[in-house]
Image: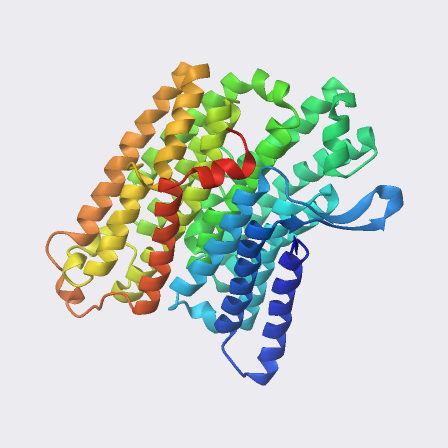
Amino acid sequence: MIINLIGFLIIPLIGIMALILNNYTKSTSQKNITIISMCSTAVLFLVGLVYGFGGFDVSLVQSLDFSFSLVTNSLSTPFILLSVFVPLIAIISLNREKSESSTIFHIFYMLAYMSAIIVFISGNLISLFLFWEVTVLSMFFIISLFGDGANKRSAMKFLIFTQFGSLTLLGAFILVFIYTGSFSLTTLFATASSIPSIVSYTIFIFILVTALIKMPVFPLHEWLPDAYLSAPMSGTVFLSAVMSKLGGYILILFGLELFPSILHRFSIPLLILGIIAVIYMAFAASGQKNLKSMLSYSSAFYMGLVFIGIVSTSVSAVTGSVILMVSHSFIIASLFAMSSMLFSRIGTHDIYKSGGVMKRMPVLTFFFVFMVFATLGVPGLSNFVGELLIFIGSYSVFPFVLVSLVGLLVATNYYLNSVRKIFYGTLHSSLKKISDISLVEIFGLSLFSFFVILIGLYPSLIIGSFGVI
């Protein structure tokens, strides 16, 4: 029983139609429909892992070689895993969001969810670009319609930056078609050597700019602080845990696998950029008083480590980057979810106004400390293997990358400092009546923790799926 990949499009579309119909019938909550649809997609993925996935291909415009093609390549499975499960667990955990009763919110969330999955399994450049755009536009509307604070300005900045990245991606795909006569990924990899050198460099630069914006990596990260802070928490989770991985996926698939010699020539300046980005983001995170802001910069810090692993072109480091991307998705989503749980009870994200919370919220404290240990690379948890492979692999080629360890030391300081300020010390008098997290929230955080432990103990589940080592 082979699972056809078209199911990853059909099931979310059915969920979106159910949301629209439910808007008139009011028979159940919008959140329940979203969760049922996402759970069905997750079951489809798990069955596919056991029995295998079957491709799907329909030619739409033969003269342009435009087809709707879905395939799993050697890289896609880990990214399907994170894009299927992280948004699902997040929507279960975040049960106190204002937007959870809005049909429009859930439609856009489902569109973003579906489109991100399709990007990872698209076998045609046009369909990849179209669903890439749907993901971007869905998140724009989520930020602008349901965000907090200066959400309109933040949404526009997000749209301008990401649309520029979309234009460079489209430019790369158009050049590919001009010189290969096809938008098919299979044809592209078979004929890439026929592309003239100057055009190959241009395509690579376009792809690199797209990846730098989407991951995001300094200095093209300017959209990140406002967008992450203004978005509703489920939107922030999606931005940090799923959308940023689109950039890493594109950089590996097109930058590394398509033009490895070009990437190797640019390795040293790109590694220097990655080191600067890592150190800058670590210090930026350490200077934040707002927990959500700190986690936002910290998310970019870890994507900087991923960038270092990819551009080093070391097989071990690239493997570590993929593991770290999957691991980071579950960890940062969990930390953002706990930030939301804290905010819903104490009314602030200010780290300095929530001391002594452990006395009233021991269960949340346990999960938060656990995830801090995981993100700092404690052996046996998911980040450890990814970070280790990145540093071992990149050091074997370019020893100077160890300078980026400064960023890890700073990250250790600001994470442990945030734990001390939020959970320990004297309990503020205004917080004496707050309650610990609910059973539903415990269930969601337990699911996040399960994946963190599973990946930490059995990283071969990810390494084996794309066969780099």
